[in-house]
Length: 276
DNA sequence: TTCCATGTTCCGCA
DNA sequence: TTGCGGAACATGGA
Image (cartoon, rainbow, N blue to C red):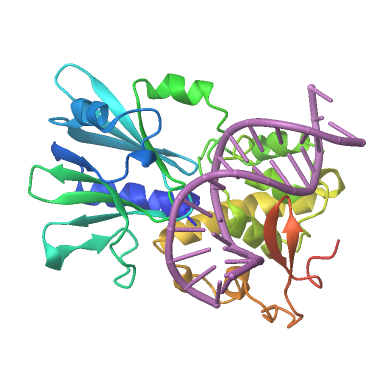
């Protein structure tokens, strides 16, 4: 679930509740979520450090922890079910979506802060990861992560350059994190639907106006979702994501929404307004 | 009870 | 080399 908009909401959540705080203790409930380091190593690097800065690339969230002698970046990846929460006591517990219905369970790592509050990393299905990075610039340079879909520098020209070198179907290309980072299954379907583009169209078959629309909707759909604090109920009723279920009808032309596997993922589309 | 969802990585095939 | 399909990972809900 956490795609770019959700992770951006998590980033803002940390800025709001934890920025400037010092980490007094780290509690790891599930060691498996730590990629390539031990709980002891994590604790040693973090305790006493100050949460100084946040940054995001695609679905990855980075939090800078500053120590007197050195600083380190915490890397959160939220997998499919990860999210954050913050609490000072039972009454103030709040999750990053501001959604009171989401249970505060499956806490894998907890950061105890110097104002007596706690920042918690929840991950039910354990596909998420938490790790440390010494040098963020070299990490990003060496990673295969493509440009962030919402980065201002990722403009229409860069979008075309990224896509047009590939002889792929459009949907897998939009979702490939080394091409563009941040778009997952749900928002890829949404962007294609808003432009009337069938998910299995080859990139080469798309017109200039198709590509322009995909660029604009990529920015619009993701930004709208961030503006909604990633609450999908707040998005327009004309969005396909409300109809990702059996027997749903297209909000535009009432045709039955179809689902099929494209690029290995369940894909929803309207066969009428997204012809092949 | 089995299947499915969801992101990422890896393996293998053409 | 490139494109693409499938498996594996973990877990709970349908």
